Every structure is written in structure tokens, then in C-alpha cells.
Amino acid sequence: MRSDGDFDTDVLVVGGGPAGGAAALALTTYGVRTVVIGKYGWVADSPRAHITNQRTMEVLRDLGVEEEALSVGTPQRFMGESVFCTSLAGEEIARIRTWGTEDERLTEYAAASPCPMLDLPQPYLEPVLIGNAARRGAKVRFDTEFLGLEQDSDGVTALLRDRLRGDEFTLRARYLIGADGGRSRVAEQIGLPFVGEEAKGGSMNIVFEADLTRYVQHRPGVLYWVVRPGEGIGGIGMGALRMVRPWSKWMAVWGYDINGPEPVLDHAEAKRVVTGLLGDRDIDVRIESTSLWSVNDMYAKAYSVGRVFCAGDAVHRHPPSNGLGSNTSVQDSYNLAWKLAHVLRGQAGPALLDTYSAERAPVGEQVVTRANRSTGEFVPLFEALGLGDGLVSGDAAAGVRRARLPTAEGARRRRELAEAMQLKHYEFSAHGVEMNQRYVSSAVVPDTGPDEEWRRDRDLYAQPSTRPGAKLPHAWLVDTTGHRLSTLDLVGGGGFTVVTGLAGGPWAEAAQVCAAEFGIPLKVVRIDEDDARDVYGSWQRVTDGLDERGCLLVRPDCVIAWRRSTPVDDPAEAIAGLREALRTVLHR
Image (tube, rainbow, N blue to C red):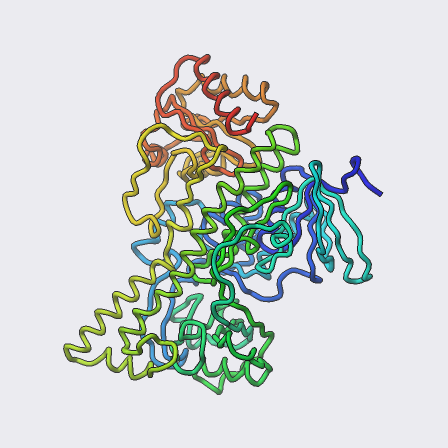
């Protein structure tokens, strides 16, 4: 039996991972009828993705689940020490401070966002997303498999299978989101164009329990890299021990030759790999699960066809380097959800949905390229230790001894080792990759001035900007009770916001007129009013010369859609400018 005419729901989300869960949560929060299906009986049981960057934490903050995420994640202070060693109990080769914990970088990270970094593995992230989506009204069906779809000018009909009963049935939706992972059936069926290569290398994950406190508590971190060339083919010439829960639950990562027979990863082999990486065979190790996966270098050039959209690993497939996978997935859905909501409510023209691909496909390409480049940037480490390419030959312990010689050769190798570690900042401290997204689409009204000038390395350093296409900069303000709040706390929430200064009275009048004309809520924030005082002067420092009588139009995803930098005193001029901006952005 159908509801709402011929439709069972407004949006069907296929997949309940980070992308699907975020889509369901955002859509339901915005009042959109949503059904989300998952093929398996519950959320992810393997802690694959884990690094949760500041931009994703800002998304969770806007969706009202940041505190819950913080309560189940591992805080930033335990994430910082990335250790390179011959085994966890063996010789330490080098260390690098990561994920914004380095003394020089911690202040920069704190200044860029009201949110910290967090280590939040998938089995803990996904219940936050799916659980809150269900509490807010999303209909969640596990053990439900997507088989196929047909779409027409009005909607999408999905063929599904109930994996408990075994029967097939259809569900009719106005739109469908394929968030069904790296082997996306949705992406395949709609024929998304992909660039790149699949299955470049093979890796195995082994989740295990062991108390490793004695080896890690004094150097707390998320990743411990074990250089063991010659003991396994494939991967990057080393293994990794990844913290899941400090300091008792872990995941070992090890490579295998993807061109050969698939390895038999039974309990005995899994324990052999783990104890070899640990370097201490007396530790009590309890193997919990094992899995094999392939290293990919592939991204989609477009993310949608008609009424079907794809997000997450369905459209960007890459190694876990840089910790960008789940972050990019959540942010894909955050970008798409408000657009779907506005189109479904008749507040925006359907062409707004075309901007999803225009804005997110370049981000996906950047992420795939960066992650694969980071994998290759281990080579200078091997060379500094005299291990060649590090994949098939060499003795890591001997390499360490060579790097400690009190000779000219030793000095050279120590210098090369330090340079190799500096290069890894592009993997472990790529703050700019995480925060410097600049959208270019017809949902952004471009400035007419010169292009943005990047003052420092764009990949390494976040640069706040009030230019259209950038995320609204974070600055701490103070409310009427004296409590701090971020500028990001004043925008978002599924609606548009006009941000101006205390002297920007004409913009308040313009917002009222345009809200009535366009039939949308249009919030007004006047910096330095009693409930948003810039007592630190931090807003002044990040606004790129924006006049107090100027204006920013901020989208529901906290991205700046339009900017009037120069002062406006005439309400009629403000109304005309804001009206034209909204008409452009909403494709009205």
C-alpha cells in the first residue's frame, strides 16, 4: 500500500555507513521522510574508518550529535604519537606528532574550529548517526538488500530483498541515495563515470584484544608503524598497529600479494601476523575478527544521474592514508541533504541538485589523489634506512643501526630520516586538505575580485575566508550570559542565514522581505549585538576586510553563498542584492 500518492518515502538511502547514516540523520533533521536500508543485521562490526576531523565534527555539531560522538570517541590528546619501529616491543626508528597535537600546530587547529579532532571508529560512529536518525523519524530497515532500480521523471522504484524472509519487494521514492560502499551496486547501475585503478594492492585487517599499555601509554597514539620489509609482499613494506580503544583493543594491518592466491587468514595465521608486529610473543592476544581488502585509486567524475545520487565510498575509493574516507563521506551527505530538502519543499528549483556533483566531485578527486600520494611518501623513510624500496628486501634493525652511526654516513642518514618524517606531515597533519574546501558551482555567487591568495601550503594549513564557496570561519563570540559560542553555532540548522555587523540594519530589513518573497526561513545574525559580541576581536581578524555594513549569505551547510564586502546603507539596495543572490543560489 502506497502513501503520499505513489510514493512510500521522499528519499531512500541505500547503505547505513558514514555516508548513509549522515544522509539519513540530516534529511530527517530537516523534516524529510526518509527510509534507510542496510544489507546486514546491524552497523559495521569492523573499525575500518576512525579519524574524525574537525570539519566532520562541525557537521555533527550542527546536526546535534557532537556531544554523543565525543562521549564514545577517543580524545585528541591520545591520538598524537605516530611511532615508526621495528616492532612495538623493538627499536623505535622515529616519531611524528600527528592530528593537530604538535606544539606548533595545536593552536592553529584550535583556532580553526570550535571542535577537536576525535578518534571515532565506525562501530561507534554509525550508531550515533543511525540511532539519532531513527529517533528523529527515519525508517531503518536492516537485513534488506538493494537489487536494482528504475527511475522516471517523477521518482525512483527500487527492487529490494528482505534477507530474513527471502522475498523481493519494491519501494517507491522521489529520490535515491546510493551510499552502498566501494562495490556500489547503485553507482554501477546508473553508470557513473570513474577514473583510476582498482585493486592496486592487497591488505588484511586483524582486530584483536591485548593489553599493550606498557608499550604505548608513554607514547599514546593511534598508529604504530612496523617496518618489516621482506616478510610480506604487497602493501607498503610495513605493517601497522592501530588503536581501536586505548589500550586494549587494536587492529593489525598487513599486506599481501593481490596478484597471487588469496591468503588463508585463519586464527593461527592471524595470531602469527599480530605477534610478529608486536615483537613480544608472551602478550595474551585474543583474535576477534579478520578481513581482506584491496587498495584502490578511483573516483567518480560525476555523482548523480537523474534522481539517483551516490555518496561516500561509492564514489571515492582510496587507501586509508590521511584518514579522509569517512570524513569525506559524511560531508558528501551534508552537502546533498539540504539541497534535497529545499527542492522537496518547493523552496528551490531542481537544478540546485546538479550542484552536488559540481561541488563534491572535485573534493573526492583531491582526497583519492592525496591518500594514494601519501602511501607513496613512505619511500624516503626506507631510503634513509638503506632499505631500497622497502617492499621486498632489507633489514630494518640494521637500517636503524646505520642511522645511529657516529660517522658522516650516520649523520646523512639521520638528516634524511628527519626529512622523511617531515614529508609525512602531508598525511598526518594535512589540515588544509581537511578544511580548505572551496566550492565552485551555481549554488555559489562568485566574487568579481582577484583569486584567493594562499599564504601558506594549501594542503598543510587551514586558511579561513569569507569568500563565497568557503566555509564560514569560526570565531569565538560571547552571548548575553557571558558564555562563549562559535560563529558556526549561529548558522546552519537546515536554513539560510544573513550575517552582518551591528551597523548592518538594512540587511535585517532585506532578510525579512526576501524570506516572505521566497517562502523560506532567513535568520539574521548581527555580529556585536548583545547575543553575539566579538569581545575577542577574532571575527574582525578572519573576515578578509568585510565591512561591518556588508553581508554574508550563508547556506544551510555553513558555506558562504554570497558576499557583499562593501557597505550598504540603503535598504532597497540590500533587498535587491539579497534577492538576486537567493534567486541564483536557489535556482528560482
